[in-house]
Length: 114
Length: 112
Image 1 (cartoon, each protein chain N blue to C red):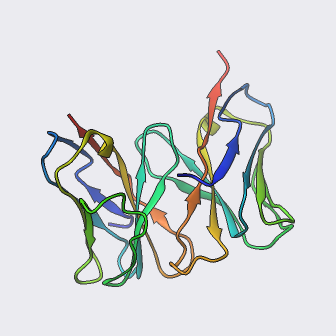
Image 2 (cartoon, helix red, strand yellow; image 1 turned 90 degrees about the vertical axis):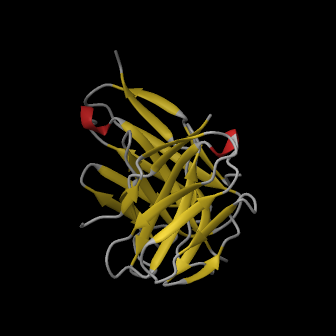
């Protein structure tokens, strides 16, 4: 089963709103990654975090690697319609010897407000 | 092609049938991963290859699942005697080493 707790599970956005989602883990991770998955596609990497406390931006996206190495958040500023999709956090365990095998969260589904 | 290619995109199998899913990684990528993604869930790790060596198969859910990468490039995930709980999207990813892994579009398996 999955070891990462991701929240919220889903949320509605209105164009221009800021969005925030986070992941927590009971175990330590060496690397935190955030992916976006569109319907019928594989996950695409958005941001990678490699150091505890690191804050990284990629355009309107900002993500942080928690100091305890057990959590991370992703913020999307000024959302646009193409931000709709499913966002996954993923961590690479500190005791992982299998290359860069990842553990994924359950996903946050972003939808547009009717 | 430029990306990870998986085939078939969709597969419907009758319960008990054997299936084989193919992954063509990005050329030159040493590492190859298989993940299983159930509906509404995040991907879950199945197995990992470094070249032709299967270094980790701890995520394979049962001995009905088997993966191979005999020449260190194309990989096949085989599922024997499929069951309804095997219905999922099977994702393949490849990477040069320990850097970013690129995912294919996946194969959606439906067992009826």
